[in-house]
Image 1 (cartoon, rainbow, N blue to C red):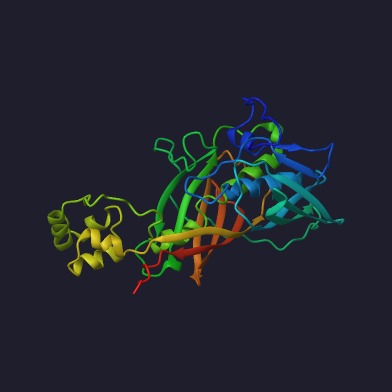
Image 2 (tube, helix red, strand yellow):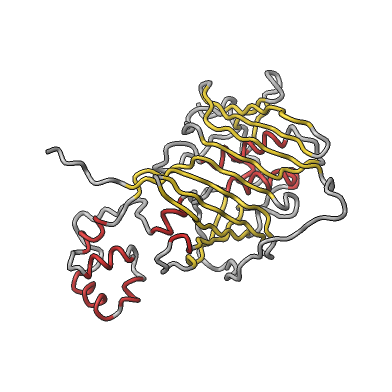
Length: 353
């Protein structure tokens, strides 16, 4: 059973993302214990539950133990074990510190008695900094705005709780992966209910912050995440391919999968199948940790378009690091995120000789 208590009927007065992230407080056992009210999503091909759901529910649980005049300003998370979507998740909130200006909570997510995820969250009292403050903010880049008439992407399927529009990768032709920036517009579907308060928008932001995050490393390196299976049949005629290679490389590069690695192999006289077979492919990609710094926790709506820009300053030793900045549509920086994950390539089979 994927929930501890039978899920209630769908509530039409709240958004899909609120419905998905709803928590049940187990007050009769311990007021600091919570569990998922609805089943949690397991992405196809993934090792376990979508990490954004656990991040968001830990934040939601911690927020329910904090005075109303305190705001979340940071959370630092570690993915310990893959979560099983067929088993309820139990969240335990520990009150670490109750200060005049700051309060600290840790939340552990458990299944079958084992910790699958842990996070430490810090909250700051509103207006505790005084009248004089040092202030600055990273400026949002000049990018095309979201277009309502364009086909929207649903990263978690047509019934998923949020939608996005991708923008072309900045510096995509650069030979330096760390110079590239992956960009998209995101928002929760529907309207987040007034009853959810600012906490619902924060939880929704936390949920969406994990979407395609460590995948940035694969995108800037142009790695196969899932190699297309062609059954021995090329998707483009080899003669047409050779003609484009000689006469119109720009058009060739616009075709799916035609990156520098494949084009170089084609120029060396290899077939398309051979060129694609040699292209590096992801063997394993999972998140290790995740941090979010919230800059304006009560000054945005997660159901309005937000711009996300992701870049990877480093990858090596089977891991990758990614930074993300999230802005409101009018250009205010509302969150900065950092994630490190395992990024291992498929290795050639070892000789049995």
